[in-house]
Length: 160
Image (cartoon, rainbow, N blue to C red):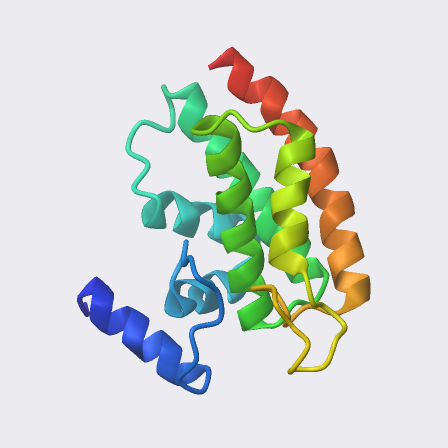
């Protein structure tokens, strides 16, 4: 298995040598492996990739696995390509970190999401956001999805 840095370099080469987003939650090779699975396979692979060892006894791990599995499956059903799947998973992780580590409100998180999505639908020279590989329609669907999941996740994280 390649070292993390080597895998990231290979992933960047696979998308034309450009880093697509500033954060990388899962490598492109991991996203590819997930995209080849059914929903149960996605869950098993994510459990492995996230190094969850106490899934049967840890409510936190179970909630996080559900959060990422549901998110990945939703994006896959939206027919996102590999780069879009990767960017969406980065977004899920980014928003979760904002909630759990920084205790950001939904409003503040939506502002961060808006910054990340700034420039969607504009020409290459006008773009300023990280997620310019989504269409305007996809961006709207993502915002709707994240609004629903965020409120659910906020309630669940309060329990753990």
